[in-house]
Structure formats: structure tokens, C-alpha cells
Image (cartoon, rainbow over all chains, first blue to last red; front, side, top):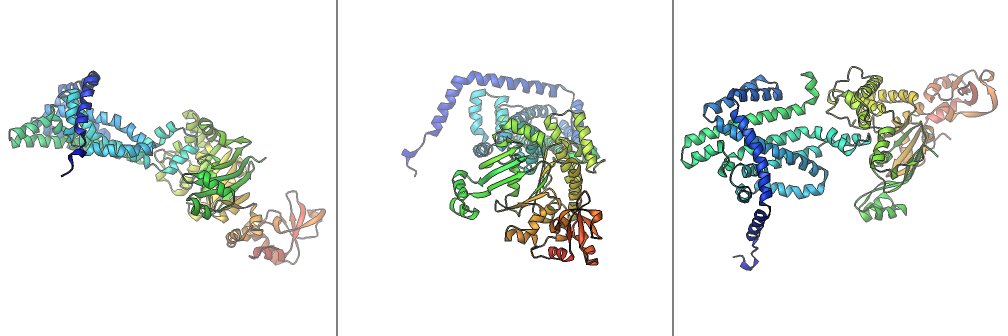
Length: 287
Length: 345
């Protein structure tokens, strides 16, 4: 038995800290939550308000732009169509809106953090364990304080998704920049390029295939968070899965599960197609 | 004072270079300092003077510090101690914006593995230096097009580096370095990664360009044949120390030590040594047509071309300078002695 005198009341401290945050900064958190919510609600309205065929056309256009492959376009449109035939279109659009906001937020935060990590070995040493924690800490642990700060609903769902999904884009941005050929960097410096010219003219363009792979993974991980997100009140496909579990309705759960997988496939393929495009800059002129 | 002055440069790699610097200054060698302090000596008290318009070759094996030295000239690496100046201007005192302006306007660099930007086509690679300077698109593309044509790549403007052979990529590298019209061209083992035939083409090309442009070229190589072929003067580095500086003939005829001699052993002397460096100078002034020699050569003729003449006749061969003045004579035995591996005298 571990001696009780040596127990550290970490849990108590954390509780006190969260209470202190809620009391002193509750209003600030609420303002932040509101602005995030405004964006999400607007996007959700657009997606749910648009006719289904318009969304299909948009998906087809984006896929064509990314891949120039009509077979892929057809495949992804059929996948989206199947979601509709399962009667889950509206819920899929809700999930889609949540995913787009969470992924965008992850990229907006993740790419600059990744760049900063690539520039500083010290920051990298600090960030790596934090990223590991973000990916391994069970999400419920930070969902509870998030609930206390932001209330039930979409905002804590987005934040939980960002915490879980941002690490890949951060890691791969860092990696992509570090993998840029040192001789190319040296050449750029020898011509008198400033740090800004090097970052935007050389490092980021050359890291782009890796950054795209990171964004793709981030998207996949944010989709995998939808079920947990629905537990704290986010609507969408996850809600349907949850309902299936609660009512022991295996069929309903399965339908929603299939819709989630199809949505993931659509986004994965589009993301990969963009990734490949950023890689084959050299053959772009042959196309 | 010479155009580029490098004075007493030390470069020590490691966490606390100042401690090791004292040892290096007091004369300890590379191995001793590594054993005592764990620091690596990159350059050990190197001083060089490079004249405007000359092709200056720095030669050494890997680990000799030659690549470290050339990177001091544009401060890609800063020295631990010493002074470097260009035209009297101390480049080590420059702050970052001044240094960047100096690199943009006055220096061009060519790299061993080309260092081309893989996401840009030939045109945009060649125009890169001008773009960094802030030149507008139209002007920089006109200039870049001219240089692309000059290095023989017209028609490849829209190709990407990975679509070109090594030799073509290095032509792009050369055009990129020349496009900003720099005073000094730094070439770091620029031709070492190329096939022998391509390498010799590129050397030819560089010498042709240099005959017109008269840039100051600092060329790094590990290949003595290359050094002797293109260099006006050659500096030989060993373990970060300067072993010898001199014109190609001086290096061949009077190697400073066994290390240099070992290098020169396999050199094709007939292609390096010229009439001027082995002739017996004539006293007085006799013009060429009054000479009693029936055969004459120019002072810069290489021994390979003199040898057949020398073998064909017992007569001394006259050596003429640029103004057809007789400045010396060469006898058959002198040619044979110079071509044999023992020192000339």
C-alpha cells in the first residue's frame, strides 16, 4: 500500500483552478464560445438549407478540382447519395458543419504552431509531450471542464475535437519544414533571401505535401470524434449512433455508422487528391 | 590590398569555441584539440588574398575545411575569429539587412548538388535572385531568358529541375548565380557531382564565360586536375590549414610538402606545364624574326604540344611572348625532365 501521507491532492488543485477560471473568466469564455457558435450555426444553416443536389454538385466540383478523375467524382457522389438514401442527410450535414469548423480551427492553430516548432528546437522539446498528451488523454477528462466553461452543446464539442485532431497537422507541418533539403535553404540564403522570403517562398511550398497529409489526418480524426461530441450535446450522425446504443437498435446504429464511414471516405479521398496535386508540381504542366 | 582579404580565420565547431580557440592560436593541431576539448577545428589560421577578376581555386580532400571556408565568404558560416573584407569593406560587421543586401547584389553561389528550388521551373529558378532583389516580373524574366539561352538551355524554360539531367541542372544553377550580375561567383564543388565528360564540358563553358565576364570566381574542388585546369591560382587546404598557395605550375614544380607532392604525382604534367615555366630565359632583347631558332612556340603553350617538336629536332625551340618577342628557349632535355615525375631541377 502506498503511504497516504505522500498523496498529492492534484485533483483538488485542478478543481480549484477550474472554479477560479469559471468565476473570473466565465464571461470571456462565453464571448469566445458565442463567436465560434455564430460561425458554426451559419455554416450549418447553409449546408442544411441548400438542396441536396446542390451539395452533391459542390462535392463533385471539389473532387474534380482536386483529382481530375471522373471515376473518383462518380464514386464520391454515389457515397454521398447513399447517405441520403439512409435517411440521414440532415444529420450528415450537421456533422459536416461541425467537422469543417473543427478542422479549419485545427489548421489555423496547427500550421503556425508547426512552423514555430520547426524553427525552435526548444519549443519542439516542449511541444512534443504536450501533443502526445493531447492525443492520449481520454477526451472525457477535458470535456468536463470544457462543459463547465462553455456549457453543453456544440462549442465544447468543437474544442474537444480540436484538441484531439490538431496534433497531426502540427506534427506534419514541423516535419515537412524540417525535411526541406538544407542545400536548397542554403542556396536561398546565399541569394540574400530574408527569413520571411525563405518561409513563404521555399519552406512552406516544399513542406506542402506533408502539411496536406497532416490536414487529411486531422480531418479523419475529427470525424472519429463525432460520437463523443454527440455525448455532450452536438447534433448529427453521432447522436444517431448514441441513440442506437441506448435503445439497443442495432440497425439504426449501423446505418449511422455506415454514414460516418462514407463521409470519412469522401473527405479522405478529396484530401489525398489535393495532397497528390501539391506533390506533383513538376508534372502539372504535362496535364 | 586585394579585393577579397581573409585574415587569420579560425572556425571551431562545438559548444564553447573560445576555449578551444586559445589552444588553436597557441599552435595545437586538430587532433590534439579534439582530444583535449572535444571541439572540431574547421579552419586553423587561414589567410588568403584574392584579386579581382581571377579564378581562385581552393583545393582539399573532404574534411579539409574547404566548404567551410567558402561559406565564410558570404557568411553562411561565421568565423570564431579573424577578419574578412570585400573591397575594403568588413563583412563581419554587417547586420542582417546589410548582409542580405550584400548577398543579393554582389555574390552568386553555385552548389555541389545544385540547390535548385524543386517547386519552380527553370525560368523561375534562374530569376530567383532577381525576385529576391524585388525586380519586377517582366525585367527579371527578360534577364533570366538571356542567361538560360547563354548556358544552352533555351526551350527548357518551363521544365522543372527533376526533369533535367545533372549537367543541365547545374547549367541552371550557373545561370541563376550569374543572373544577378554578381561581382563574385562562389562555386562549391560545382562540378563534382557530374559525369567526367559533362564535367569537362562545364569546365570549358565556365572558362569561356569567364573570358568574357571577368568575374572574381572562388572555386572549391577536391580534384587537382580540375583545379589546375581552371585556376589562375590555387590554395591547398589540409586539416583546416593552408598548405600552399600558388599558380598551377608553381604547385606542380615546387610542391610545398609531401602532402602536396602526393597530390601532384598523378597529374598529367604535359597538360598543365607551359613553355614559360620551364624555358631558359634569354638575356637582352632579340625579336622573334631575328632569332636563330627555326621553331618557335607561344609562352603559354602546354608541354604536350611542345613535345613532338622537341623530339623531332635537336635544335632549341624559341619561346615567344604575346608581342612575338623571343623571351626564352627550350631544349629537348628540359621538356623530358619537366614531364618526368622528379622535380624539374
